[in-house]
Length: 238
Image (cartoon, rainbow, N blue to C red; front, top):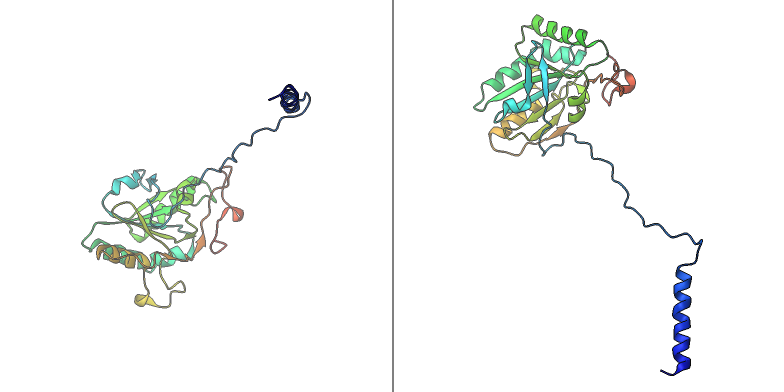
């Protein structure tokens, strides 16, 4: 390379370097990857059911892990809801529990109350008295802050969930196909269908049925009492 070409190459290189470091020229900041919102864990059919520990109507604590190896049926409950009152007072629930207890697998039936539209002591007392009046010996758990109900996405009372003996949620939805209570003994009780399919080694179908009933009266976001604006869905009122 002759001197002229060498000088020209040097000048071009110097110009490029000076242009890349001009004073006062803002540097382009490196883009940071957008932070993904934290995924909220909620119950999904086919996945592990959310764990919980709650206190029953007699002050005893119950954890889902206590029932490891058993099939668990959960009913979201509120004794002031006419739909819940109907399925309990008509003995549909007691008949279901009796049938489940006679099956070849261990099946546990638990009612869960996430009501928070009145003081907690009134919620507990009301549920306890209702069970006592009916002579029900079932477990009734209280979820006043709504954490468990929201984890399960419980929308109505009743809203049913079936968990298999490996802790997997296999069904969620309506109590039966008879929300107007016209079919009597001919009504299909979806939780019973699911449990029978589990025991027979079959796939649970349907695994979801639109729930019906009263809306769950969850606590407000600030921990206050629930109201119309705090219910995630279902029939208004009550």
